[in-house]
Image 1 (cartoon, chains in turn green, red):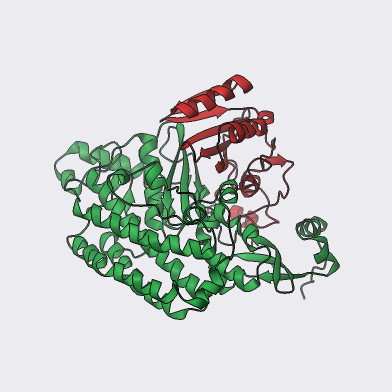
Image 2 (cartoon, one colour):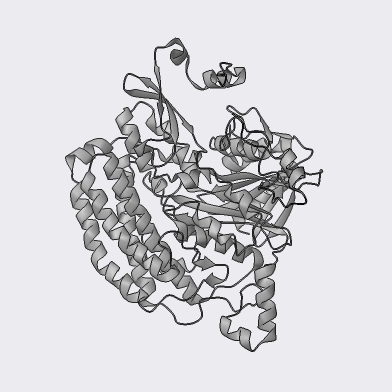
Length: 413
Length: 170
């Protein structure tokens, strides 16, 4: 029979008592474990709650259950092969992850991207932003006991996933963007499918708003819940819709444009209340703005190549391999060895649906990333949960996890 | 380099005798470990760099001096500028003062660096592992930490690998 280990690690006990208040040790407040398997934590997040009756005194998040060592793995793959790892970080925004990684590699090796590829990147990134917000809206409303919103949201999300599948062959793990452009051009049905989506979607946003915006139960659960001031948001490095709902009009698409965002006309929705309801309103308006961007990008979608012509970084098309020895050499070199990156480090950040998604990429002259670090918005934003939840009910904590919109793959990497 | 960033970099250069490098229009300022807290304070209070965007480390093993670089990215909302601070650290188990007092969100980033690289932060309020299990041995993102894989066993080396292979026990 295996012996049961009754020995308690002293250091662990110390660590534990240091985290909770004196009341919890004396038994005046209660310690409750929420998660890691809990439907409202949106994944595998464990929260150690300290409760006074039904009120939250302290929240101690415990993360890392979904840690897959993406950064370490990417150090062992060539720049091109590492693209597939990026999809697995934030699985609701995989196109955005592809984008920021490709932008970082392009900046490191100084590679150009043709205008058509840039425009398609913008269209797909904005569609993905809508899809991600739809998942957020559906699950957030579901947490607050509004079941039907979830079904409506997933109906429209399905249309976007169909477009993704049409382009890349995959609904979620697309790996569609590659350093220097796209994997290949979009199919002919692409434009019609996107136009069809743009035609029906604005009315569908009104439909969701009709269900929630003036719903007294929803307002009761979200207004004045988890108020985040602008100062706290800046101090704690909160970015994205949560920051804009606290009154700071900061959007990387506007202030540091990439992929040609400067050509498109769109607004940055903001709100001053900083509560859960304000964050809801900001995200709803963001979906409308994304529709505007996609519309403009589609209207002036240029013709031309979708991948850079620089053969030192981008493999030649299949048709050239039959008659050009040089193309065969480039093909062989790129697929066996990969392309080298110079010694140096770059930091590139884009606006993901959750906030600032950054990549720190360092090259050492070889064909693999020497070091890659992902500054993921969920990881940064989850830190303020402690601040938001203090003094609220446990039921409101569920709303707060929904409103900061975390993806655990993004938190744990 | 923008005008405001130029002023900030110049001030850091004068005050801390720091060296500056530029790569692809990104400015990095090299500082010593005992200067980092003062430098962050100056950036936040005098030059309006309000947000710590990112903090991470790079391992240059087998080099020893320096073995690690700590990399800070600090952003200014007001001026839309980003500055990168780099702190080289020598030796295999170095330590550096925490900047949690200046930017509170450094808390989790520093826990991650401790977890992944084994760099100790002096004065950190809660330096525990964050992503790996609490009883994990080693620091996975160090370059001398192997990626880990199952060794392929052939008939000529079966016994050799079998002897050191760790099987599940009761």
